[in-house]
Length: 137
Image 1: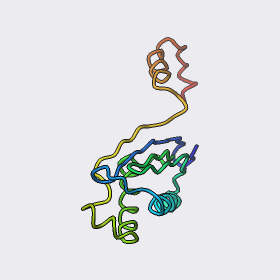
Image 2 (image 1 turned 180 degrees about the horizontal axis):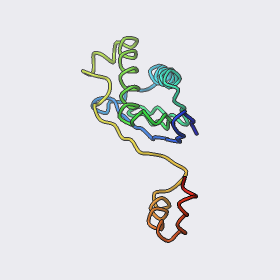
Image 3 (image 1 turned 90 degrees about the vertical axis):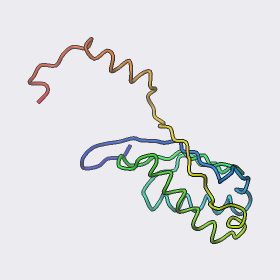
């Protein structure tokens, strides 16, 4: 749970992205360095990494972020930062592919309440006792 002067949020995202052409280039020292870079970027942005798995041909990240950071912003921050540094540190990543990451990604929200629970809560609003006007101010 994150508290701000203007509100409270608890936003978690499952983000997945792949190397260009889904090449299996994320092994050994590249994978270890990628983990370090993702952790560095998350700390810089004050985002919490809940889970991170680097597979040979894709990355899974569960991250909690502030309410002003969209899923596409989060994915692009990680992809841009890691691509630039990994390609400068590991020359073989420059020779085999025009870019490190594909332009696409997957993102899904993650929360403590299911979509069915939220839908049921909204659908049953009129069934709840209506507050008096004095209770709402």
